[in-house]
Length: 346
Image (cartoon, rainbow, N blue to C red; front, side, top):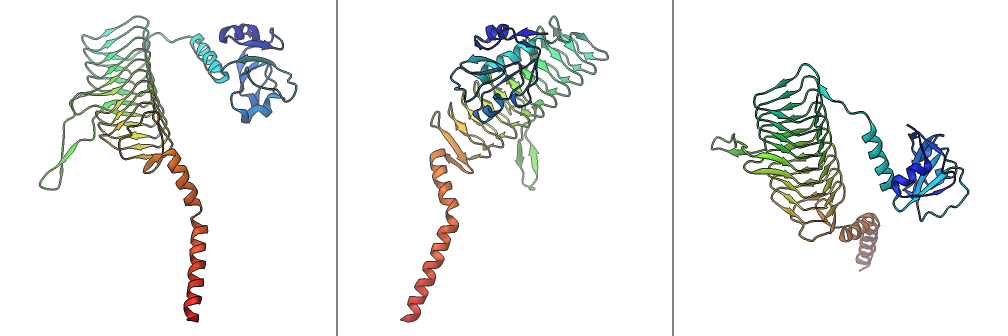
């Protein structure tokens, strides 16, 4: 489909600089722009590409001060990245959606499926399952018994949802993710072996949650492992039994959260972060990538870094000292030599 720059500006409440009738039919990165494409500039590092960009229009911040003339049409908005994200969402919504049921599939007894569903080939849905309207379940998904799935949720191929779990509305679960696998519970016995502790709880995923590919969210030993409304999980994340992740928290790839930890709302956790079990992380906390969290963080909206992690200002001061260690060592060696010479003279 083709749109004019003016039509796009109206969608994102932007103002036009240039040709309002410039035609847009695709998207492109600003450094790879071509005629007919729409690009955006949010990071100042990429500003140099704006002045030679061949895209028909570029979304930019309303505060951007041009250093040179541009040959493209500009659409100025308060938040270039956010506006571009809105357009991509609308573009995604315009794509035709799969509907109907492919064969073969298996659907158990007493299972209710809402209207306008899509069920791919080789899907297995157990008994006593309740699925809402407009749900898409792609090929090779296994949904066990006694599960509920809300409206407009999408489950991509090769996912498995274990018995008794609950998934809210408007959720997205990407390929290879496992929801409701057993928590890591074992008790040592007198023979120095481990007896498995049955995991009889479930996983509850609330509305508007997105879970990346190849994640694992363990069922609770008792009660529920809970992923609250609006949470976004990247790929390759492990959430252990009885964890609670608060509303609108985001966690980047390859992070792991051990059992019974409670993470507050609006937290931001970087990639490859490790969090021990049975602690509390307050709301609004930010944790830098590759940090190790070994104790509770009870200060709201604080920033932590390092392994073991501590507050970011102390970490940065310590990092300066660490980088100066070779110079400090050299000074100590020189002082030792001088003291040795003085000792020899005596």
